[in-house]
Length: 125
Image (tube, rainbow, N blue to C red; front, side):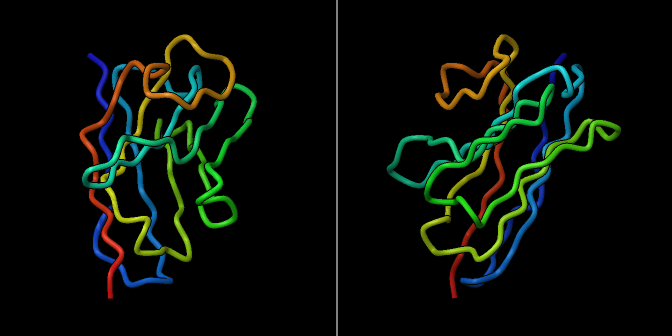
């Protein structure tokens, strides 16, 4: 049974930082493509970042480029999203997801097979 468990969300002031973690069980993350998505109230779920674990390729949405960094610790079977210089518009529920079939960067929700339960990130003063 595949499980993805996110953690690390919370309330942070604008300009602050958070690191989200996505711990996987039931599969080995180094075989797959992992994505971080977010969904703000009243908005569609959107891709934030993507990581092709087999070759290290990454993708970042324009809105987070230069501020967020995706990485993986395969020994811990965990993927991270380091978020710096947070803005109020980064407020959302953040989800990690795994694509079982892709070997390249994929950015749509339909490309992903397993999802975590989400972790809330709130950026507010």
